[in-house]
Amino acid sequence: MCTRKIPAEFSYGSFSFTNLEQANTTKSHTTRWHLLEKNMNNKKTYIFLLITIIWSWTFWVIGLNYLTDGINQESIGKFLIFFFTGLYGPTISGIVTALIFDGLKGVLNLFKKVFIWNIPFKYYLYIIFLPIFFILIGIGIYKTFIGDIGSFDITAFLSIPAILWAGIYAGPLGEELGWRGFLLPELQKKHTNLKSAVIIGVIWFIWHIPLWWAPFGTLVSGESISFLPVITYFIMLMCLSIIITWLVINSKGSVLVAILFHLSINAGIALLFFPELNMDFKKIHLLSSIGMILFTGILIAKNKLKISTNNGYK
Image 1 (cartoon, rainbow, N blue to C red):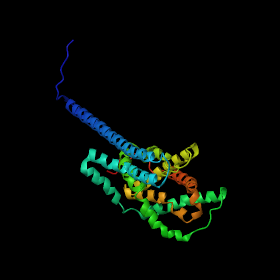
Image 2 (image 1 turned 90 degrees about the horizontal axis):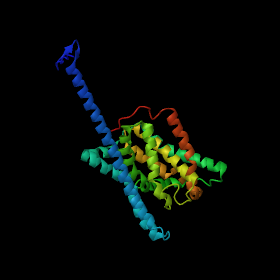
Image 3 (image 1 turned 60 degrees about the horizontal axis):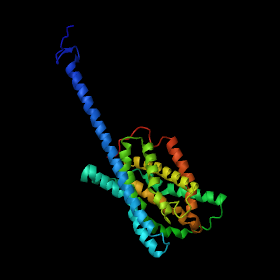
Image 4 (image 1 turned 180 degrees about the vertical axis):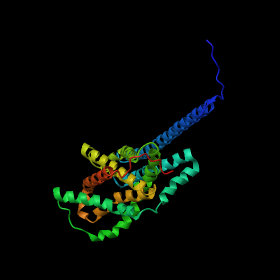
């Protein structure tokens, strides 16, 4: 049988073997680039999570060890040092991971997100009033089904600045540069905004687990570890993760928004005006999850987090 070799430059009309080879080469290079980029993004995420867990859990376990012989002023003082140091795991991990993979430029880009303040004014209103709304729902449910809420103390307004000043150095600054500044944009490169928020919610919940055995730090802390408080706490963190993601994606990727909302949630400002409820503040916060669930449901039902995959803010 006779075979005929086709020249490399053979063409017929608009068809050309040379063009076909070039197209295949370009497609191959593009595919390889996407695979390399995906692999790099996965590595960044895994390294971030590894550093976060190792940093936070190590300090918390060491701190909890000081409480094994009893809780007193000295043991609490030592625990607090390791407690607050551990809280900075996500932020430190975000900085270190950005430095490893993107150099100093990556770190600067990360910090720039903290200074994004020029956003629609309504989102600042959400930051202030959503947490108050959630707490008021909790107080309303408490009054209806549990007991008296006591008197209203208008002078509590004077303590708000001190509460906010002390609170910002804990969870908000220690966490949000990592969770919403670094991890959220990385996840958005592969997932929808909603799925990214859900993934962070699960990670956020797992990250807090050692603090369940601490006298404070989570809504499970200082209580017997049982199904109801644990599942309620999980639902709360999931709702908060979705709400914060919604705020961030509508605020040009602002980490400042995440920090302020986290601070507003932790402060529980509305609860300050009902001093008799201080003994039951955990119960009020747990009941406030009803409001969080309702608001999160509205965000999802109205597709406020968008369906399409977001490419992140970097």
